Image (cartoon, rainbow, N blue to C red):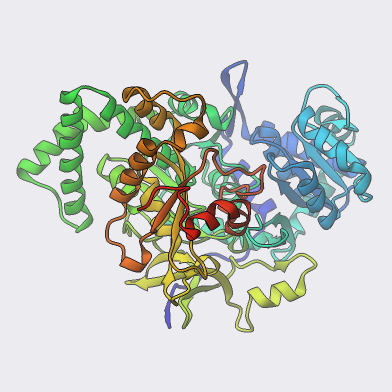
Length: 612
């Protein structure tokens, strides 16, 4: 067994303390920023604190008391932050829901948690709750962030604040602050329901100190400046954005700007010009694919310059990553490559980005190295909802591509005999809500949380090789980790999504969803005539093209790891069809079941896919 990690670097704490200390310490005019009529408007620390207090008092007027659960169903916006801080400073446990959840899944979480009230962002979210409200006996108040009271709601946020303002006298203020100060580090701050790649979602009980300790550990690992600006677009219902893009950024005095939507991130990035951006690998994969597409779409000269610059940058990166400083001709060539190629990529991020931070899923080493070579550092980290979430993270001083960095202070990491990553420390959850058996299964007698991930420790750097439950065991007894293979395939510009299948089968195969923008451009270039996408995928020319593109990515694999066949799928995997979790992780069992006929035909030897 291997182990790593050290003692925590802070005393136990609470989220009310984090909030009030940050307001007093930073007192920023632009603590939050949000778009109003297309223009970013600031919200000051003091204005935020006033609104949080009024909403907290308003909830009390509705009969919400300490220990109750209150749900939040909304996209990222200032009101989300206000609702959250109002709850945690009132000793109320909040329950964030992903805004893309269908009504039935939202109902399960609200019912399981026993939420007595819910904040919704707009009419569409309120309609979801109205559809299932008859099945939610504990729910007595629906509060909308919208300006007007629309169908399915009991109060607007403005009305709730008005109730709070009426009650906002000196005595109530003192009582509110006293109650906030009385919150204990071990009290449950939030119930976050796991995505559920296997089985029904479980409510993860995270305490105030779980989140406090993780904020303090992350702050000590990654250096922050006094004038940081962060762009928030990952769902705040996701623990990565919640801890890092919400609590941590507020704690260090970072101005938090909310993207208008996930679709406007490229535009918002140039408007806000962030110094910090948190994201899952999908953003970096798309940026990488777009850069390659632009390079290949240009003339021969542009293409040659790009590939020359990339080669120079990779040589420069190799020297830097080895701990040396590039000199002489290499330094000169890298400077030219920066001016000709990579400065344009940096400009697209706003021109002053210090770090990307990646989490939520594995990041392909090739993509990470490309960004590093381009002068855009991605600090990849690792964690789970149950660990608040950060277990380990790369830092500017301890950076190694292909790993998720070293454990943060207070996070003990041990590799079990079967390769599973175990972790212990103040970041580990209190348990699963109303599920003592599941809690005992996840946290052993020694306090170690069993992550379900397989990994190795080298020089205290942690590398994730795969999910324990995702490991494919072929009929011949060979173990295959699918994620590294999928990551290789997804770096190809013609590929949008890829899932390797093969458990208890003779050999692995791969399901591939093409990048339709690229594939249809190729079809047009080759004068291929087709009536719909399904017909295009059935053409031998297209199958041969995708076969070639996928095969070229699969280097360095053992023979038994190599997918023998490929099936091309017309549609991207989706959350709505249950194929992806809200955090975009593939539900392999669902994929296996949904595409069973396609998969079975490949193993029967029928010609439903191209052979690799």
